[in-house]
Amino acid sequence: MIRRNDVLRATHTWMMAGAIAVAPLACPGPTWAQVPPDEVARAFRQEVSPALVLPDDERERYANLALQALQAAGIILLGPQYVLVVDRHVKVQAAMLFWMRLGAPSLYIGAAPVSTGRIGRFDHFETPMGVFAHNLNNPDFRAEGTKNANGILGYGAKGMRVYDFGWQQARQGWTKEGVSTMRLQMHATDPYQLETRLGTPQSKGCIRIPATLNQLIDRLGLLDADYELAADLVSTPWVLRRDRTPVYGAGRYLIVVETLRDTRPAWSPAPSAVKGTP
Image (cartoon, rainbow, N blue to C red; front, side, top):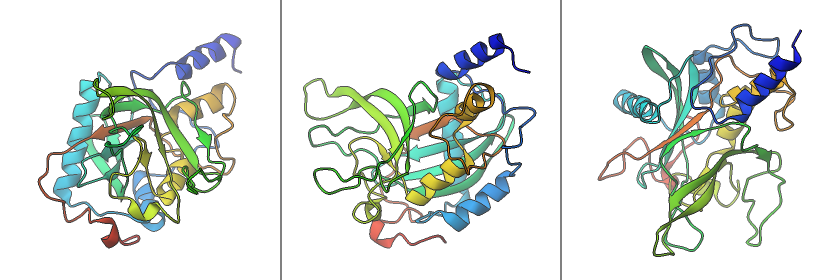
């Protein structure tokens, strides 16, 4: 039985921005799927397209960058969990999914091309770097499937999830100050006109990802630690799918980095050369 005070404490937990990662539930309920990371990696290979294949040295590089970013932000992972890393470098534009464990090597799950912010026009921002918590302080929503004034499905097809990371300070190019506030979101994009451009900076500051990656993260609840905690102890957020199979060890962190490179790496080809699932 859950007491009222326990519910209030749980509500406070998921309403606060997570400074320290909460360990996965010790006794997962029947809705939690005992899917090991290698099965998630297999699902990534089978379902996510377009996808990228990182060499071992790059996998280790991004895992280390993620750990450094978490340490710099004062975040301690108290349990194994999934973390999404995005490299905003104009010649990379990629997202890498890892299963991170304290005191053990991180496991690489998969990678896919993305589009981050492109400055140079009004209301366009450079996607900010840092560690961003996915929690109920900034509730997610789902795309309505309507076109904007330019005839574009900005959030992708109807039903696609929009991951909200709140208001953030970001660099822009239309004022003397050069910095303004933007809403950081991660979402799918127009499947007919814009998804083929993934791998290059195209957005106003948000992170555009393949629809198939959006669906995988959504269905398995890979970044839904706080949402599932709320569903277990308080009430189920409406945005969660009814047919979801959330994995044990769901995470809550998006980490945006920028590597130093002079040329485009072979594993992150230009959009015209990106194929489907390898």
